[in-house]
Length: 112
Length: 112
Image 1 (cartoon, chains in turn red, yellow):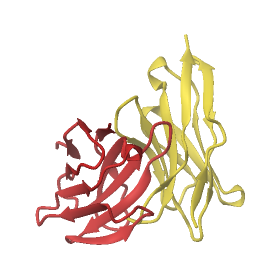
Image 2 (tube, one colour):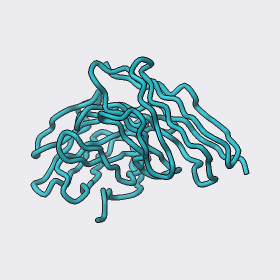
Image 3 (cartoon, chains in turn green, brown):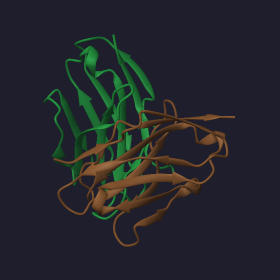
Image 4 (tube, helix red, strand yellow):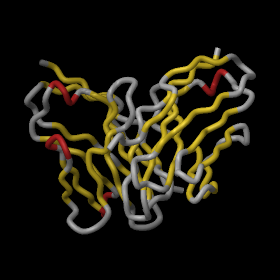
């Protein structure tokens, strides 16, 4: 079992550009959540996808959007990048209501 | 609104000494509580979880935590720490597959 996999592991973007981050959930999991972790902070919830729809959303602007595919994999898109978007982006997957979330290794995004 | 407080930003203990990391939460219903560990630049690994039942839960790597409803606490303990336990520890609260709310983390340093 490969667990939750994220790609790429690192990337550098310029202010104003757009970025797409990808996540493959743990085998058998149907729910994907995305978190942003700024340096020295705890992860902050961005949104959660289930059955290809956004089910919950945290306090993030519309520049942050996502998608879930029929195979449960997911993408996080960020438009008009700001320097403050530099962070570790974590994907977590889970199954059902009474289960824990498993996290990937994250994508380190640096905006210059 | 749900919240998690980890009062200790940084804790230093000697190898072989006991450890207790504090976590207080605010949640409107019976919470699901989690402890995650993060090594530098890595994702989050689940140490243990509390959903219901026995308030003393055992986790991986010799960690345990106790849920105290009256104190809204879920402190993490280990009787004897190893140098490999040095990492960042996050307490989180959520319910089912709702979003997780994390504390700001406690950085653990181990002295040889």
